Image (cartoon, rainbow, N blue to C red):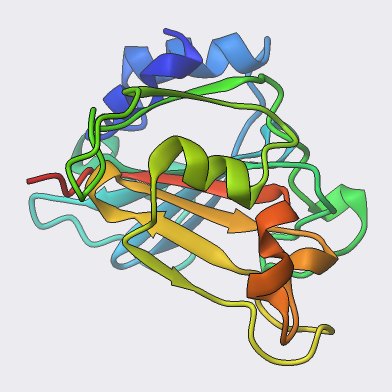
Length: 207
């Protein structure tokens, strides 16, 4: 299992051999995740790997808030989303910056290979493979992928506002950007030069 296969892991359970093989390419031994469970979602957070896995319950399984890993029914959980973190600045699980002890480290493998549909929403041909480097900026993402389907963030004062984000819904890809250029009233003017902070991979909505 390689990083180019991340999207193929969607739909797998926490006990999937393919998922275990993928994690082992990032670290050996694989660290124990910090598991956060809720009735409609379970997060496996690998802070030292810059990775968060979102599982959703199926077949009537309804986890309780605060359930420990041994209380979960792995066979009734499927991977629905993957978040990959960069090292623009320290990112806590609550989205705030802070000490390294409670933050996500940068994802250990770059470039990150992402697969997308072979054409933009306007029908313009493009490469079905995107290689994401650690310093890739908003402008470079748009050059590679075309104009996003959705975008937001960046409003409000530069202190405490949400960084800009863009989403290519058809490709199951959302990118949040970090640094000073991604926040504040002029974020969209400066955001083209902002490096990515979080890449979120989810099921493609391509038609």
